[in-house]
Length: 317
Ligand SMILES: Nc1nc2c(ncn2[C@@H]2O[C@H](COP(=O)(O)OP(=O)(O)OP(=O)(O)O)[C@@H](O)[C@H]2O)c(=O)[nH]1
Ligand SMILES: [Mg+2]
Image 1 (cartoon, protein in one colour):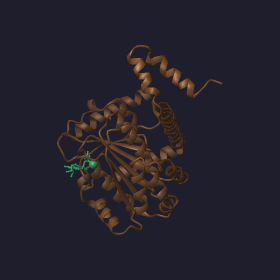
Image 2 (cartoon, helix red, strand yellow):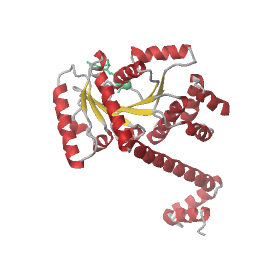
Image 3 (cartoon, helix red, strand yellow):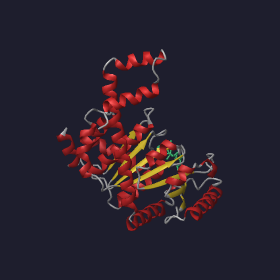
Image 4 (cartoon, helix red, strand yellow):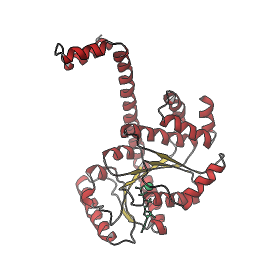
């Protein structure tokens, strides 16, 4: 296991792929792996791209990646629960190249499927980001589909989050939940070649302006227009991302946001660990089922019973 981590740090793509699989499968060694990985993280810039199905997130990811590659930046991509595969372009080219040589591929793509447990998926995504970070990727792009609360959780892994909308998909500002406004650092109206793009754009602009007037945040999310398939507006998009990154760095928000993220992640780990330990003790012998029998028979109630259990495991000093 130590060898595998060492290989990742030395830049072995194959080792990285194996580690990610172990972490994804919630292998019993995952905590140990992540513990060894952690000291080598914190260097990558994490970009989140979210939005309704089919808005063009993967196409945009592909173009952004190409621009970053032209700037000699290395990129890792995580597609969470993709409903359509990456098509053509630089990403696919790199992916094929990557499969041919396990050596020093500069773009690494990983798809992750929902396993019915999005809370777990958010954590796995965060771990995979860290593995790519430790590997040495300058950028990690996380594509998530949809704009529900679960995706918002995943999006919180990112330093900069782009919300992508497109005309003709029923994407309106009304369909944007409050949580989306909370995570959007940048809006993109993609498919600007389609009818209704300008209406959608001004609709978002109005909403963003309103939100800005109320919250008086230091950053007002810009609203950009792109035609991803024609690579139009993508340079400006990367520039806007760079501007947001500079803003975060210079205002001290990058550090502050990452601290909050670390706090949340550590708290989640702690909760997991506590419940795992407690449940092992409680369910380890037949007493829990005996207790359930008593509860079913109304000899005991579940409310005071759980308090008793916790008290026997954590006796008050
Ligand atoms: N007309 C037009 N089509 C586009 C544009 N960008 C992407 N598309 C097309 O829209 C379709 C969906 O693009 P994707 O990049 O797969 O969209 P996505 O948001 O990643 O899709 P999911 O991951 O399935 O949610 C593809 O057929 C693209 O070629 C655009 O700017 N204009
Ligand atoms: Mg996609």
